[in-house]
Image (cartoon, rainbow, N blue to C red; front, side, top):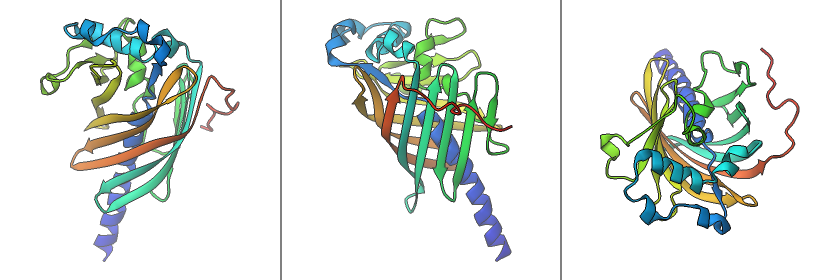
Length: 259
């Protein structure tokens, strides 16, 4: 009986870490795109069919907003999710994520599994959970698209396993990378994948964008699903944004946490 209780508690701790990692990669990647009236600025599919990875990356950046993507002052997203560790284990959750330049605040609640918050205030990272310090949110997913012309960021071809798909890889100076798969008709990112090391354990994840919301000329993905693999554990999640704000007045304490 004692061993059974110990195993349950151990599994609970493992799943807590896995679910937090599951959240961080998806929420690190709010997607932006221009409205239909700006489509003339996009490269047409025929023009991108035989382009090099760097050109495809530029086409994808143009499709998700180009300079408009880069110039957003802040983003606020609040929503719900359903996390699954197995076909019979599903957990409801809520999340809030805030971006302002390089700063971010990430809050996820899924009682009793998760009660977690991480903040980067521009100088240091603070986590509410001892032993869990997530990869930088601005080094994975869509934020990498704004860095394709910056020193230290490398755009390359997709790996062998994805060679039949249309897309490219972006790697940050720290070695974090994301593989982007783009739609042939719109040049919008429809899938992305990444792998990274978490405390000595290899983590890999894949995300599918299921829907966008028009925010007055900017589209933000409001529905997305994810698969995450960490060691012998595979988890799944479906996310839906309930409230999305851009360039709004943020709370003064948005990036404040007691050390």
